[in-house]
Image (cartoon, rainbow, N blue to C red):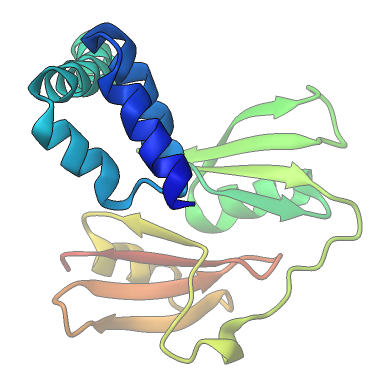
Length: 195
């Protein structure tokens, strides 16, 4: 093992700076990378400069992409449902969501997107699906989607007599007011925000 490292080091120092950097990269990817790469690049400023320029160009590419208008706007939970159309109707009737899109355009749907203001949930068809109830395995709490909102107390009051309220409105130790809803497939949504 030592002989291989020494041979690699001789090979690194016996070539031009342009040839050394690729060898350093392969050494950095090897299981022997430890202090060898750091020590060698410390002793060889040209190799260190090249590795630094290479790293900066990779960061620069990412920075350029961010400056070119790339923006992550949202993350959307996807829920499996045995009956997508019935689930979409439930979200509309109970929570005020609207169906923004379906596929195919007629029932039975394999996909639907339900939305309300800035919240969206995608429903995917899986015939016979029953979501496992995992709440007992995490007594601290468990939810499948957290929906941040204004007017959480008003929204809660409008539906609090419904059987789908899983946890009544309460103020959490971190200051948010929250309540939980369980949809017909067993997914738990937490609605939270300032009261």
